Length: 363
Ligand SMILES: [Fe+2]
Image 1 (cartoon, rainbow, N blue to C red):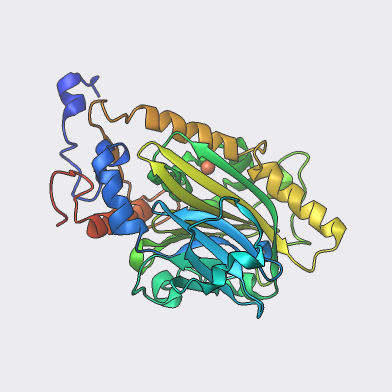
Image 2 (spheres, protein in one colour):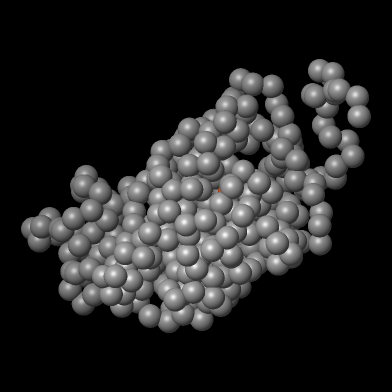
């Protein structure tokens, strides 16, 4: 194939169909970002924390959804509430009684579901959690609901990239070639047969397979501590619209929650969870399994963080418009971009905007 000249670089990829590419503008345009906050983030359910982070009455955590400060708190009966946060500046802690948060009448919709996550929405008339997730949790809900879970790892990262790029790195798997760990523990026939499955509201499952941890010299099998009902060493994954990821790898659950801060800045909260019933020895092993891949200095996570940062650099608001191609079709198997197409189609509906050309309405 001859090298492309400048005119060819600028052309819309003519051989691709609608929905098989998106414009780089949707990752960097300030006006589009504001619309995403109003049209998407202020309507969806967000798992703002886990119930184990609110272990007793009056314990709270704060966050924001679509720029709105939120506080979640446990009452004396053990029920968890969410409300608009008007005065608490700490990220977490215990409420002083005289502050009287719980007298504030305007509670937000809040539900504790799917392994004890505290889901909150600003939507005044939201779908139920079951309607919202559709069937996307079927792949792991037995494992998450079998017994109480506990957060054993938390870190957050503020990354100079658009939140959708973090979604993308969790959704498309051909970037697995970047991860030496994943190549040596995964690249076999059952890996390449993993199947992407799409659900209503833009959610996607990446099918499971058995990871060969012991192929990575110095690592061990995760057989003994695999989550309940999860086949030994299996790896289940849910990519939720518009940017939440549940990633269950044998003995450890990782959950990413994204809080977009600007078109080119996102805060990602990373939680690692195990079983509350763990002995101290089991907990240490689980933490090692989690952190050796996904901790800030693990084998895998920083590779993704660096990749998305450099991707964003090519899609600066003042850079020439580019197209990100999603045209790979392989019978929905692991490197088929069906999950990406499904996500951006959903995004287009919510935004009433064509992700391939943001000047046009969704068709
Ligand atoms: Fe990755």
